[in-house]
Length: 263
Figure 1 (cartoon, rainbow, N blue to C red):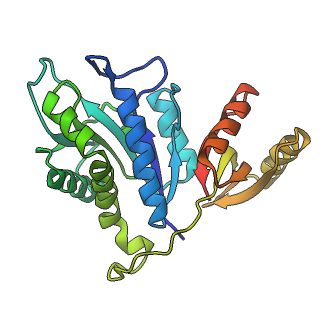
Figure 2 (cartoon, rainbow, N blue to C red; figure 1 turned 90 degrees about the horizontal axis):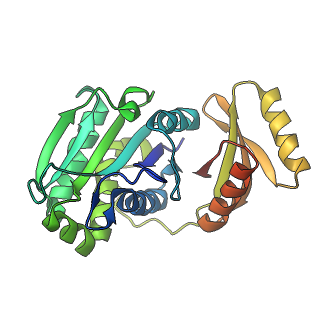
């Protein structure tokens, strides 16, 4: 079974995160999450997002989204900020503790980002963050440079694709044994990625069937799939991410709790 990564673009909506000279952390976080997610998907990894647009969910809710998705890993992307402008420079990754594979992944990501040109500030233990404390899978929060440090912003802007690739490579390096033969260096054939909007996740198949019938009655093409031990109700299979996001917005307006997933 393919590995599933939950990618969290930190902040969103009315919560801009750190702001520096008009630059908003939430925008950088989302751009990075979408770019990293695309690379992971093209490498055979399933990806779910806590957000794919400029909306707000609490950190507790984001952890819950990750848990409900059945993801194997949870990675939250942020930009750092310091009390004074241009005070610090570099990347660090936050963890609840340094036990297990999450620490290996954090070190791999930091090392890959150092190759891009960021200073490697190492790992930092943070037990007060909901996305690290309330997630049920290995979780980490990557601070991709300081948003109020000009050099870090210039580096991110000049080498954005390399930065996204570095984060993805750190993840892939850590989970390589779970997604295939690590010695296989051949370039995979490109595949079309399918997206859907997950509307519910149930242990009881009858509850999943009830929601499925409700969506079909609304004229929304849907199906029921398995996500680990859960039954996932998914709507609107498409190869166009924008179409999936548009359907997600429509379903949210109808009062459904949703997230975009890859199939």
